[in-house]
Length: 136
Image (cartoon, one colour):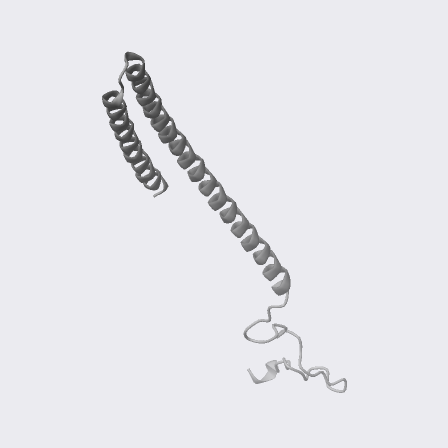
């Protein structure tokens, strides 16, 4: 997209240059027509050449400015992207630090293997009573 913008701006600069060259040419013809001596005609001719060269130089300067502007825009976008990625990384680190170790299991505590109650008078009583092998 950026190169398309630069190309359009360059085309506008080229069109301006053509207009400026045409203006210089017209002024040169007018100068030649109004000149009375050979020296004045030569002066008008040189002025036309100078105006055309100035128009061409201005076009090249505008094109260079377009390239600089495009490079600056790309650099700004890259810097903004890097800053955004840095902020995301910092945010992820903060979230991970804030939530680390605070997650509770969904089904409750997992210490199911310990007896719920133990009666000192009856050591076999508890969560897992002993089986009586005599009834088998």
